[in-house]
Image (cartoon, rainbow, N blue to C red; front, side, top):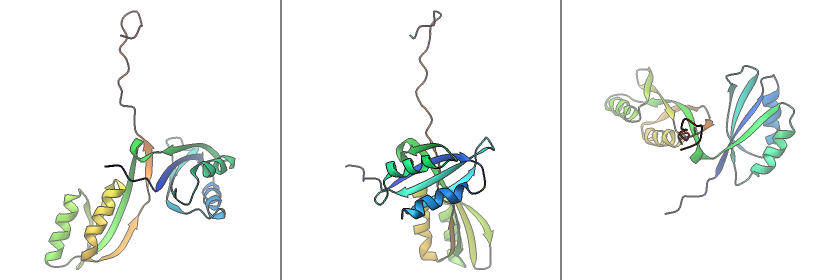
Length: 178
C-alpha cells in the first residue's frame, strides 16, 4: 500500500520580530493568489526573532517559487521546508458542543478518549479542548459533529523538525571512533 501524495507543505520561516513583517509575508502570498491553509506566528527563544509557520497547498503553489519570493523579503532570516514525516506538527482545537442529558456524558467520555479536556460547562453546552497532531483533531471534530458543534476554533499548525535519533559514535581513549 503506497502513501498518498501529500497535498500540503509546511514552511518554518524565521523573521525579525518587528511590526509589519507578518503583513509583508501574508501579502506576498495574497499578491500571487496562493492560499494559506494555516498560519501561526510567535516569538522564538530569542525575542529579536519570530517563527512563522505557514502551511500551503502544494497543488496550487510552487514551494520553490514561494521560498525564493520569501527570501527576497528583507526581514526573512531562515526558511525551512518541513516534511510531515520528519517534523512534529501540533495544533489546538477549542469547540463548544451541544451536550445536555445523556449526550453530555457521551461527549465527556469521547473527549477523554482523545486525552482532551472540558474547559467550560454551560447548562446545555460544553467547551472542549484538544491539542495534538492535526489529524487527531480532525478525528475528534468529526466525531463531535453529530452532537452539534456551535462554535469551533483551531489555532493553525506549529511545527519543528524532528530531533536526531542516532547516538553519536563512541570514541576510545585515542579519540578514534570505535
